[in-house]
Image (cartoon, rainbow, N blue to C red):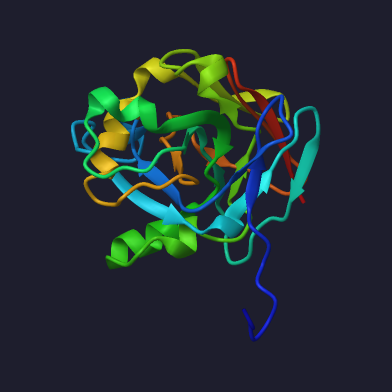
Length: 231
């Protein structure tokens, strides 16, 4: 095929303990999926899940044991961290029943949904889309994907973010309002999920700003940690 310019290479995330890579198709994110965070953001914790997307060029792979640098983004003075469990879809489906939803998951990873909170807030007030607050370059750091065939499907366990060694966010996967299976079931009524899709499943309370020169360490029990330095 003759392209007018060379296309970008396929974005992919390494699979833990393997030489395989997971090719990324779409990135879906779940908004306000922990009750305390919903209250923190002024929402009703009983609301059904809602979704937004990030493009694949937001992915920043964070190898285990290494600190990855990301630039402080433009046009914001409120750059915030959101630690999340990421579910990687390995089997296509539409209108998936919750009881079968986990059959569609290839594996799991630690992720950060980085947010330009001030820009997101402006868009909310104006009734406009969130892309400028959520979908900017390098806004989705992620660790290696751990195959569910090896680790199972985590439904409890701590997740956390520390900034320069001090706790910012700390909660437990068991406190998800909509668990991974329910999230997949709901999302698949809106989109036909495909292999390569990533779902950032929501963040707990404690979201806060980071500054240039600070380092975030985010982790989930059984999935390891990622380290991201803001430069």
